[in-house]
Length: 111
Image (cartoon, rainbow, N blue to C red; front, side):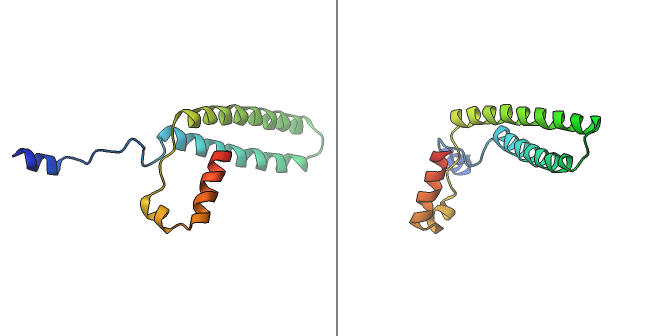
């Protein structure tokens, strides 16, 4: 195999920015999403219950679920501050009007 054919078969060098979010970022996103849905559902369910020990137990679970989700949210924020997000795919970036680019960048910077 010649050097030029080896270079042609080699994978392209990746840019300094990732093309997707990391596994940790995706897992944190979905754990928080499911946790928030669970907390919301639990909150709606327990408001209709009569005062009882089981209702108090559910209130405690709801409270600790909220504290856990807050802690995970802070950890996710720290992760996001130390890991840059991937670029928009070039086809998506080309198809977006300028105002959507501004909105996209503005909301991400605001977060």
